[in-house]
Image (cartoon, rainbow, N blue to C red; front, top):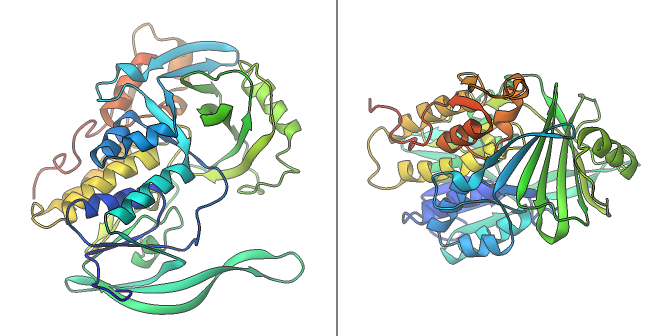
Length: 417
C-alpha cells in the first residue's frame, strides 16, 4: 500500500483514539497505516481530560512522562449546587497506579502520539479518507480517497473536502476511529441512533488569575450541567449546558461573546470569583447519547466516537475509546483467542448500555443529600472515570452505582461461545 507492503490493519482517523489504537496494534507486531482527512492538526485548542486508568495505558507505551509534562494534574472532583459545594470525590483514592487525572490540550496529546507512531513505523497519511468499504472473504477492500479542503460557493463561502483522486487497497482489517460522523460506520450501513434528545453546550477557554486548583468542578441544576477543567498556563475550560438551539455547532463570536460568558458564569458558576481574561477559544456543540447498532462486522471494527457519543464533561467516550483500542488490538493480533472479536462486540454493547444509562442501577447511599439523588443522571456521566473507577467515584459523592463489567477486561467479560 502506498508504495510499500500493505498493512495488516488500516485505521481511519488520527485523533487520540485512532492514534492510540494504531500504537496498540504496532506494539503487537502488526503493520499499521492511518488515514486522516485533515492535512494538519486542528489549530483550535481542544482539551483532553485523561482518566487515571488511561494514564496507565499511556504508561504501557512509554508515553506518560511526555504527557504529564504538558498536563495539569487533577486529584479531586467538586459538585456544586449554585454557590453551595454539595460533595467531593477524590481521584487519589481510586485503586489505580496513578493518583490523579490529567488535563492537556488535544493538539499536544496528538503530537505526542504521532511522534511515537512514527517512531514505531506506523505510516500516517494525511489528506486521505475512507470512501468505500467492501468485505471480501478474509480481507476488506477499501477505497481510499485523496482529498483537500477548499473554499466552496460564491459570496459567503464554506470549506468543503474535494476528492482529488482515489485508489483501492485490500487489507486484513479496517478500524474506524473517525468520529461521530464516521465514514467507516456509514459504509457498514450501521445506524447511530440518538438514545435521548440531543443537548447543546457552549464551551469557553480563557485565562484567569486565580489558581483553579487540582480539581474538576461540576455544577448541577435541573436540566443543565456546568463543568470547569483547569488547563496548563493559567487557563480554564468551562462548559455550560444550554437549551437546544438551531444555531448549534457554531463559534460565532456575536453569539458567544464575553457578555454571554459573564452572564453564564454569574448564573451557572457563582462559585467562580476569578478574573475573565482574553477568551482563547469558544464553541457551541450539540451532543447526544448514541451507540452504533454494532461494534463491527467481519473484518471492520469501530472504536471511540465512531462507536458511541456521550456527555462531554466526564470525557468518557475518549477514555473508554483508549481501552477499546487496546482490547481490539489484542483481538486482531496474531494468536488471538478464538471468538475474541465476538466477545469484543458483545462487551461493547454491555458496557455502553450501562454508561449511557440504559442498563444502569443507581441509588442514593444512606445519608446522601437529596440533591445527589435528584441529579444522579447528570452526575454519573460528568465524573472522569469508567468501569469500577466510576463506581468508586460515585460512591464517594453518595451514589451506589452498578455498571456491567466494571473494572474487568472486556475480552474476559463475556463467556466464550
